[in-house]
Image (spheres, rainbow, N blue to C red):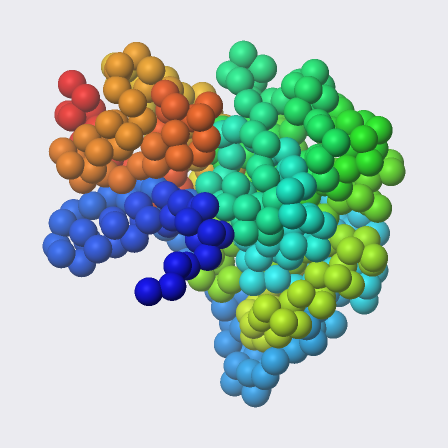
Length: 389
Ligand code: PMP
C-alpha cells in the first residue's frame, strides 16, 4: 500500500475534540459522564439569532454566497468592529466570512507562511495551532507562558525566539487555556516586536466578549502600525454559544485578504449562507439583554466552580481574566496531567483536558470548562472531591 503524506504523520489528533467525542460515546452507552473537556457552554444559541437564520432558510437563502461572504454579513462585522473594537474596516475588501475561527486561522496561515517559516506561538496554547502551522508547511516555535509572569510573554522571551526564519506571531487573548487577557501594554510590546522585526501577527479573538472582573479585550489590529500586518480571527462560537454553526470572520489588510479569498474559493467556496444571516443578527446590534444575562450567568458559575475546586486538597486555581476555563494547578497531587485526567474519567466519570496536551509548559495542570449547568458543576465538584480524597 502507498504511504500516506508526511503531513498527516506529523500531526496528532486534537485532544480536546477527542476527549469530548469519548465523553459523548460513554454517554450513549448510558454512563453518567460530566463533560468538562471541550469548550462548549450548556446553553443554546440565543433565540433572536436562531430566528434570523430560520427566516433566512425559509425565504430560500440556501445558496452559496460570494467566497468572501454576504455583503449583509460583512457589513455587520464592520459595524461590530467599529462598535466593540474601535476599528474602521472596509466590508468589501478587509473582511471574509469563515467557517469558524479555526478556519480563519487556517486561511491566515496558508496566506502568509512558506515552507520552513517559523511561527511563534504560546506554550501552553490552543491544541490546533501547532498542527495548523505544520499543515501550512511552517514550524511552530513555542514560547513559554510562565505563572510567575502571570502567563504572559516578556519582551526578552519574544526577542529570544525570533530567528531569520520567523514569519509571524500567533497568539490568543483572552487565552485558552490560562485565562490571560492581554492589557494594552502587553499588546504594545507584541506590536513593537512585530514592527521592529517585520512580522505578521495572527490574533485569535474567539473569547473576546467574555472577560471578567474589569479585564477588557483590546484588538491588536487597532494599535498604531498594526493594521497592515495583522490578521484578526474572530467569531461567535464561544460567546454566543454557536459552536455548531461553524461561522466566524477574519479581518485583514486588503493585500492579504484577497489571497485568503482565493484560498476560500478553492477550499470551501464560501461559509454557510443562512449561518451568515444568523451571525449578522448577532453582530449588527450591541449584544441584547439576554446575551448579557448569559455572560453574567457564566461569570457567576465560573466563580462558584473555581471556589469549589480550591476547596479540594491538592487543587489550586485562579479565576480566569477572560474565557471560561479553569486552569487548575495539580502539582501538589504528584500526578501527571494525563494520570489525573484518566483518574477523573475512570473513577469520577468527569472528563477534563490534560495540561500537557496544550504544550510542555501545560504539564502540572488540567483544564476544566466552567460554563456547564449549575447542577453538573456541583455534581462534578462532589465527584472530584470524593476521588481525590
Ligand atoms: N481558538 C481557540 C483558542 C479555541 O479555544 C477554539 C475552540 N476551542 C477555537 C479557536 C475554535 O473556534 P471555532 O469553533 O470558531 O473554529
